[in-house]
Structure formats: structure tokens, C-alpha cells
Image (tube, rainbow over all chains, first blue to last red; front, side, top):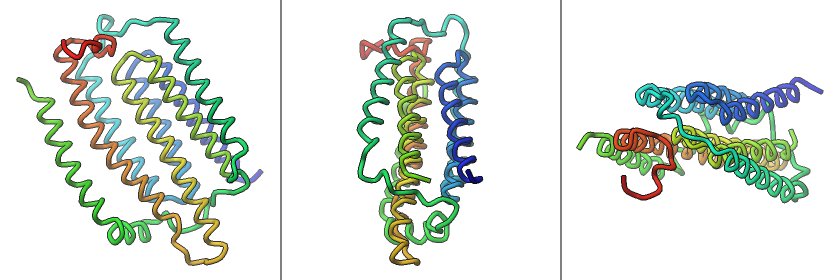
Amino acid sequence: MGVTQILFWFLSVVALFSALMMITSKNPVHSVLWLIATFFAISGHYILLNAQFLAIVNIIVYAGAIMVLFLFVIMFINFNKETEPRKNRWLKMIGAIAGGCLLLVLVAALKDSDIKNQAAQVKEGNIGLIQYLGKELFSTYVVPFEISSVLFLSAMVGAVVVGKKE
Amino acid sequence: MPINYYIFLSIALFAIGIVGVLTRRNAIIIFMCIELMLNAVNLLLVAFSKMHHLKAAMTDITTKAGTDGQLFVFFIMVVAAAEVSVGLAIIVMMYRNIHSVDVNFLNRLKH
């Protein structure tokens, strides 16, 4: 069992454990912190797959910007006992069973798929470097790139329109 | 690494996100679970892109196959960032109107 395997299992366990803690934490701030831990584990997976650009973007955009936005809104809303949503034990159990059924069905369906003998390239291969991704992004995918800037503009206008007072 | 491991890891993360959406009532937690599901799909896309690259590199060592998958992940992140900004604005507006973020109070399409 080499270093790559050990890192893979370690990062997988960290990601799954933090995700489980994220959905079971009572305090929303703890949920945000566990989700940040999950994102860091997923970034570790990207580095293991030598997708270095996506690893850095994942940390900067998700763990940095988006989660700070979540924390900001949680502190802005100021949760207390009255605003804490009520809980129903049966609905929780049914939700967990439904999710478990989905997990079971997907695993059973993909367990014997055609690609099960193939492998993902780890630690090598240079398609994840910004040098190659950037060339592709600004040649083949330049139109979607420009359209996404329009999307950002409309999202910004929408956030301001929705968020402002009457 | 065998691609099966990545598939099962992504399915597990996605199912955890589904369970979170179904069991939690807090709108912000539900939103975070959606982010988790997006990230599970991103991880699987990157793993598949590396799988594709490994297969193509056996015949041509200088191939750039698999770049598309990683760029799709980049665009998913772009769309997720835009989605979060609008969604959090909606949650803040909802809190301002009904003084709660419990999604059960949102079942009438009016306040």
C-alpha cells in the first residue's frame, strides 16, 4: 500500500466524516466549518489527481468566498432558540431511509459497470495544469467564458434587487 | 487508483447531501447540502477526465484528452458562485419577511 493509496483513503474518510458531521450538527456555524473541512478534503483529492488549478480554485472560491458568504449570512440572521426550526423524528428517519435507498440503488447499478476495470491517473499527467487549461479555455471555450461573465452580471443585479428593502 | 473508488466516494457524498436536504429544515443548511452535492459531482468529473486521459495517453503521449472535463468543473464552480449569491439574497429576504429560515413556513407561496 503506497503513499497514494494511504492519502486516498485518508482524504476519503475525512471528506465523508466531515460531510456527515455537517448534516448532523445543531449549530449552523459548526455546519459551515465542517463543510469547509469537506471542501479541503476534496481539494486534496484534486491535488492527488494532479488537477492543481481546480484544487486552488476550489479552495479560493468554495472554502474562501462562498463559505465566508454563508458565515456572513448566518451571523447576520442571528439564530436563537425561537428561530431554530422544529424537528420531527419520523420525517428525519424517512429522509435518511430515502437517501440510503438512493445510495444503495446507485452503488448496485454501478458496481458492475463496463468501466470498472479502468483506472484514474494519479500523481502524473499534465492536463490539470493552468498552462493547458488556460489555452483550451481561451480558444475552444471562449464563448461560454464570456457568457458566464454576463451570468455573473445578472446574478449581481439579481442579488441587489432581491436583497434591497422595499 | 481504480475509477470505482472515485465513483463510490462521489455517490456517498451525493447521498449525504440528499439526506441533508431531506432531513434538515434550516434553509441555509439545505443550501450547503446542495453545494456538497455539486462538489461530489465535480470530484467525479475530474476523476473521469483523468481516466479518459490515461486511456488516450496509451496511444499518444502528448494528448490533451480530458481537458474538457476539468473545464466543465470550472464552469460548474462559476455557476455555483452566481447561484449562491442570489440564493443567499433570497434567504435574507425571507428572513426579513417571516423572521425565520424554516422552509416549512414557505408552503403557501405567499407570506
